[in-house]
Figure 1 (cartoon, rainbow, N blue to C red):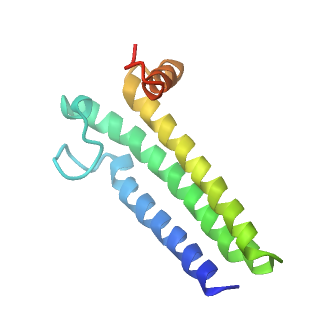
Figure 2: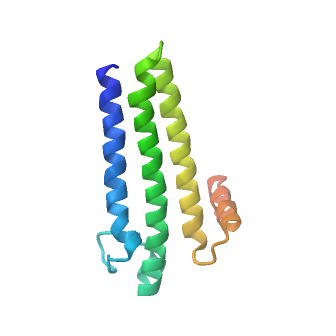
Length: 137
């Protein structure tokens, strides 16, 4: 295993544990509305009920993201150690992780845009519309 694999693997896992650690208090609902920590958007700051519901949803997404980072970190530490061409394998693992994280970002954005209706299809349509330059609906 190269030192680059070790550094990247440990960095991914360490970052994941930090993200998950920061998400747990939000998931438990132990963080009151504030200006520093949590999902701070107009809708979440409009009421305490919205604050806790939106931050619970955001924390769930962060935990999923953290688990994906751990999986990429483990892949870097375990699989690349045995690879015949580590650079090719590293590229594949990092690309797969980046695609997964980008997909999660789109899903989280879609969820926030339509919260609390929870209509994921409408949220995805809005995100795609914004990305296409149509300015939304």
